Every structure is written in C-alpha cells, then in structure tokens.
Image 1 (cartoon, one colour):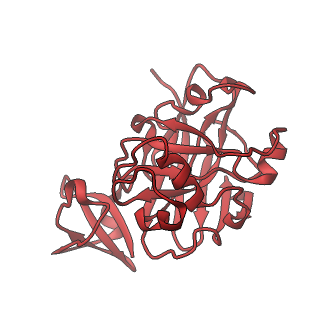
Image 2 (cartoon, rainbow, N blue to C red; image 1 turned 45 degrees about the vertical axis):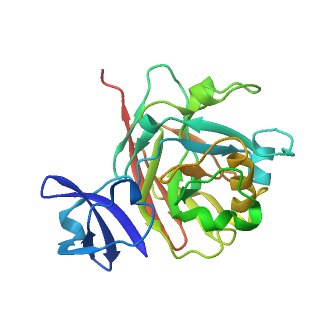
Amino acid sequence: MKLARFVADQKICYGIIEKNQILEVNNPGSDWCGFPLTETGNTYDLSSVRILAPCQPSKVICLGLNYRRHAEEMKHELPKKPIIFIKPSTSVIGPEEAIIYPPQSNRVDYEAELGVVIGRQAYRVAREKALDFVFGYTCANDVTARDKQPANGQWTYSKSFDTFCPLGPVIETDITNPEALELKGYLNGKIVQETSTGDHLFTVAEIIEFVSGCMTLLPGDVIITGTPSGVGPLIPGDRFVVEIEGIGSLASHVKRFDG
C-alpha cells in the first residue's frame, strides 16, 4: 500500500494511492503511522493535488558510511558499529520542493538513501522484532554541505540546514525485505548512484536495535540508512531524483538562497 500526505481543497489530507488516483482517509493525526485507516469517500486525481513529505518526524536519524564502497570512496575505515547523527525536523521537505543552497557552503552534495518510517513507539527493541515497529519505507536524500563536514567529529552542522532532508513521495507498507531493493540516484537525468540495499553494512533491523537502545523512536520518526558510492556536488538549477524499487521516485531541484 502506498500512502501519502497531500494538499487538496486548501487543506492537508492523507490518502492511499491507487494508480492515478488518491483515496482520502480520515485524518489519523498522531496515528498516521498505524492502522486502521478509514476512507472518507473522497477521491482525487493525483495530477490535481500537491504531494507533501509523507510524515512529520520528530527527528530523522541518519546512518553514516553504511555501504562498503561509500566508506572507501570517503577514505574511511569500515565502521564496527553504526555511525549515527540526527537531522532536525526543520530539514524535511517533500517531493518537487527546492533544496536551498546555503550561503555558508561552497559544496553541497546529494546522497540517495532508503528511509525507514517508524510505526509505533520503540525503545530497546531486539533486532529479531525490529521490523515489527516499521510502518513502511520511503525515499530520502541526505543533502550535505560537504565543505562543512569535518573528517572526524560531529556531522550535524553540515547535514542540518533547512531543506536538507527531502522525503517521499509515499510510504510503502508492503515491503517485506528492505535488504533487497534497487536504489538509484539521478543527477539531471544521468544515473550517478546505483546499488542494492543488500550492500548495507548494517541491516535495518540491526540499525533499529542500535538506535532504540539509545533513544525512544516515535511514530513518524524516520531512519535514513546511508548512501552508496557516487555522491557528488549539486549546483543551483540541478535536479536530483532518488528512485527505489517498489517505492517510487523522489525529485528535488536546487535553488540558490535569496535572503
């Protein structure tokens, strides 16, 4: 099932996507990342609505160096435990929204990633049960001000600018194996990243176990699971698309900060 948040009739709505239509469900509020979802009877053409980020996370937890080839690309040793950092909720944007190139940076990179949407409160969850706490999966772009990312130390500043976390376009709830998905990144129509999530150093279940051992994950929180090799710079005017098998495509364009 593909679920989306969208704007229609000047209000924020929630719905189930079927082919070229979206079937509105009653506003689930804080229960968006759970079931049941009750249809209202309203149906919209997808072309007539604006799709938003599929959820409103209290936090986005990110994985660094979770693909072997990307760690080599960045000239880092393979981590023995997951490397995590957090993007604030203010960094989240939806499909077709603009990534704003901040004036503090001279190098902003794309990073195509799989996003994991948490469905119910999780704390100290064992990996054997971790996927039971997942509501679904989405596409993500871990945009990074690379020149503000120190080689050693905290990465939060470089990752946390407003608009630096595109998510969407949907939450796909029917993925049974998140470790067997084809992931691609397109820069201005050219493939620049291509891999399978089977190359994860740490699986989604292992990541949830590790992160929930530290902090409580709330419904709607998102874990983005690292990027493969092929990262590179964006410039104003660029268009970047994250495409993940079974989920869809998340497109963003880059815009210069205009004050």
